[in-house]
Image 1 (cartoon, rainbow, N blue to C red):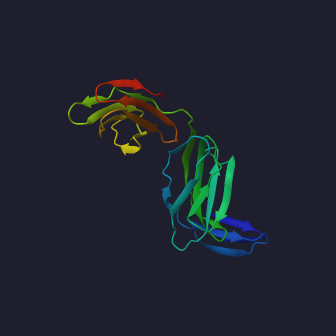
Image 2 (cartoon, rainbow, N blue to C red):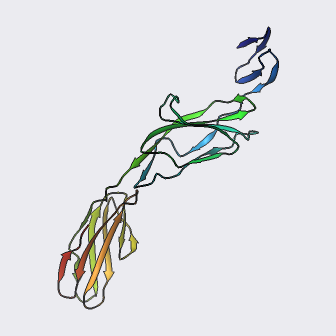
Length: 217
């Protein structure tokens, strides 16, 4: 490209930049900075929250010989409805004011006034979820003579399950766990917690002779 300002002409080679004053004086010129790599969060990342939006940490790998970046966050892919447009001196930017919705972001390296090619736009989506996960608990099976019961049930895939306060493994939302119980009456409490922090629970009362379904959600 060729730029003429104030009667002076400057040639701009591919992947190069030039900064020219209003009277045509060349202030700086050289190769444009490279594109930031290893972007985090990954494109199409989803954050779920129950009440308060989470703080989203954006980061990227350093561009050689660069210590300044331009970070932009927008509500549209064209990057015209801007939420954030800042020049920063680090490889990380944290923002906690995003409400429910989809956002687009990109980052580019800065060398003086010269700005390299942007990485992005990438999307990040925030979903407000205030609905507890589904939780279905089967009648616990008492193993006679062993002092144990088998607790089985199902919840939403991805939800964490706790029995008597202890985390247990799940498989596509299904769970099964053996518990040791003392003679007499035992209250078994099962909790399911989804990624947004919503909680559902069910309980059962177990004794050595009979199982009574009960509890609530």
